[in-house]
Image 1: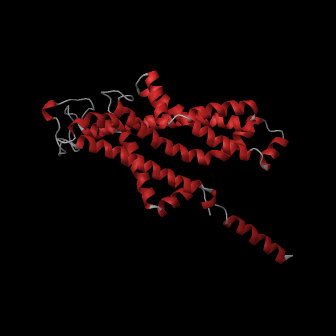
Image 2 (image 1 turned 180 degrees about the horizontal axis):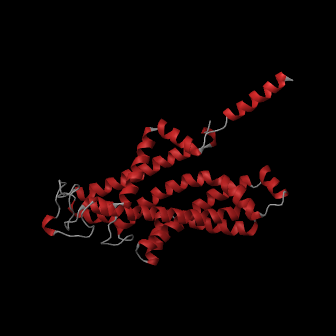
Image 3 (image 1 turned 180 degrees about the vertical axis):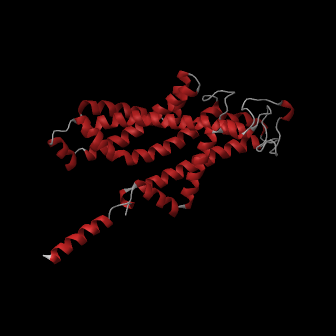
Length: 299
């Protein structure tokens, strides 16, 4: 009897010791192993802080003009130089980070909310509603994403709000496909059938048992969608279909500076570097999140 009791205590202690690490612990462990992901996370954090405290890190306004100091190279007074109208480039990059991050977050979040809702309902209930939703999704996915965004902005008109609407519509099909595919595989599993046999309503099963279990791939794609939104917003701004001047935005800065490429290359290099490093960092963080949320790598 004593041996049996000792065995049970050891088994219980072993069970406590083998409890898996939390999400935060896995993510920090991944960052420690992957220095590039750690550096990328720090850079994304710094860009977000720069966007929040932009009025406090520079004494200039993004729209203040000084034609006497136009096209100046980087100096002690203007760390990244000035543009064709004498505006401080560092100031415009800092304020442009606000616009780019806002567009990226709102566009990706809107697409996630609409797409996940449609995909979850379609996969859970099936039938005629599923066929109707999927045919609409197929039509939307038949258009290249950037062309769909250009079409929507051309119809609605250029501007920040219309660009966010276009990005939201762009991301809906992919989020719907991801969520529907995962819901179809989960709704037939034993734990869902058990919840249904215990009298749980469809809404409760969808939210507490299905939706929570499909969030891993959605979170990963959400991160990548933010990077895509920032890059697309810059491209649309370059074409004149996105954010409109004199608002500071990275794509507009490149578009306006391309005429002075030979005389003042920093007009393009500085905002271009901001776009490149920000998008790259967000993608690297998204890749680290994928590794953390992958159940095959949790051990």
